[in-house]
Length: 314
Ligand code: VTB
Ligand code: MG
Ligand code: MG
Image (cartoon, rainbow, N blue to C red; front, side, top):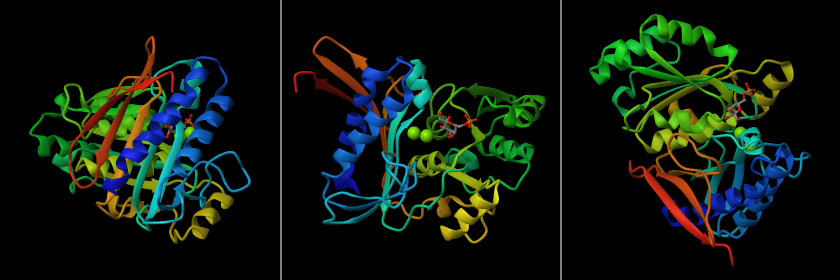
């Protein structure tokens, strides 16, 4: 995968830059279209036999990068791709925080083929990896993390998206004395942030969000030695059958990290459109745009942030 990282960084940087004219304009469809067109064009230049296994649309929902779409020149290594040209289209169109252009890549056949539906997710950093369990109660998982980190419950922080469906978790955590941070949009970066040692980082991410975003986050979390577990939440017969047709025999079973991403040969790359807790949004300077990206690689545990200056004249 390493040989591709620079090229994929160029893909997410270009997609993010393509959205720039649309930030804060209220036009989320146009923003998404610009990012998608850019991402497809750049992906198709890469010498790989790529397949989108996590995308947004189905085949008839052009212009999205759809599940099953082949990308790249068709020559070279087989690669599974998970893409979200913009995670946070509403944030982009409203000029609010937490919009990213994001890609995860992995050796062919190693990423979960998940349809676009809700997924329950829990994530923690390396200290409690191998110890938490999505089938345990929230209290039990919090106690496990506290013990693994040598902290008191009052010293822990949980992070979750500000949604009514999460209120019971928020109440439970706060009743135990665990501080709980709520964010508005975009659950990929908050999930990954639990694996990074920074002041104020959360110890546990919990939430119900998009399944595609779940698989993307799983690659980032894996690259940092953390642990993610998940469960798809099909809530119609159609969604259930869709899972079965994607070879998920028990659509609502607990998914281990390995089921989400079954290799260390993987990478996660996200360029910030607007700012988030780990990285700054696009800066518009006189002759250049500066982009800020996060690059994580399953073969080491480094947290790389890459700033790139893009001359406007090119
Ligand atoms: C989730 C999350 C995304 O939108 O899909 C969420 O994974 C949708 O939640 O990152 P709602 O249906 O409650 O709005 C995002 O936050 C992208 O904005
Ligand atoms: Mg999107
Ligand atoms: Mg998304």
